View 1: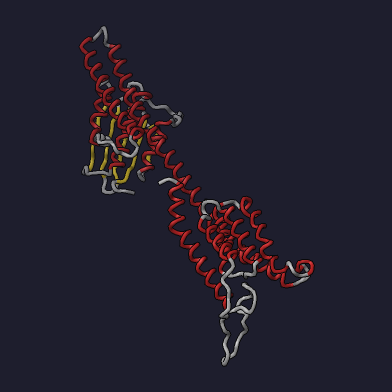
View 2: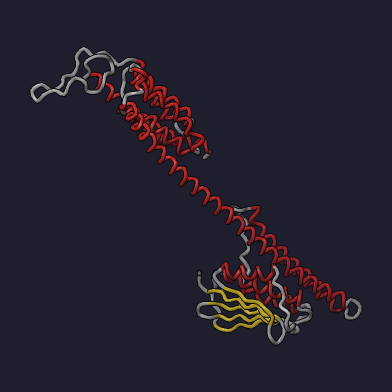
Length: 406
């Protein structure tokens, strides 16, 4: 539904009944005032006298119909209320002008004043104070109508200032309520926008991690296999075919994973009928290890404890952590071998990846994007990760991830 349609719906659902209610009250009170009047079409309300228990006030039997101008003024106020969400400032000016005319022909402040009051609230709830506050100045003549026939327009009359104070109070309350409503609405909108921006950033970060892990690991294995093929090209031709086969399979798997990862951009709401591949988990651990071992590296995987089902996010995070750690071994540990140990505990699963590279005493390697990404993955599922050189040589990555949703 478009913004225009929503505005029309609010107009029909709330503003039209509100305007009709004000019309009903204003016309009813105006007729009651007129029927009990002594003289003139709109003298002060209930001016027929207080009456006595023996002789209550009598309604006039010779009363004339309300002037057309009175009807017109009331209906202009009603129409302004009905369109208050479409043109709030113009509606406010129109309602104040109609109210002034209503007072000039002898009316009084009654239910018809609800129109300008409601419109004051509407302006304050939709605009900044600087955009609506100056418009309230047009209401000043409305409060001076009753003093036009007094000397100096009632400047020396105390009741003039009392009336202005009451009028200011009548308009200040809806204005304050409107400012509060607008402030809360803007705060909620700002919070919603911040949430959307944060969600978009986290989603981009997740996609970047996925692409980094998939492409980084696959290219490292391909590079290693290509190096092996070049090394044995003339010495061991029989070793070339396995290396090329490993390169082909690794690149194929990487492309499939990459397509699945980037599919969210083509179909963000998952409306495609094409089934998506499940996220890789620890059930594919052997594939990671064999990919490293096929290039001549020593790699092994062991499992301790009682394996059991893991939450999909935890299972995928553990897989990516192992993948990234093995990629770092291939890139930075020379010809070192790697070992992966997965320990299943009652409340958590511990994944530890170590290599037997040379010791580097006194040298603390700087953490790159790989380790930072592994730590973010572990933290995202409620776990923790540590990484650093081992005292006896090599490097170790240890992740502790919860087995339940945390």
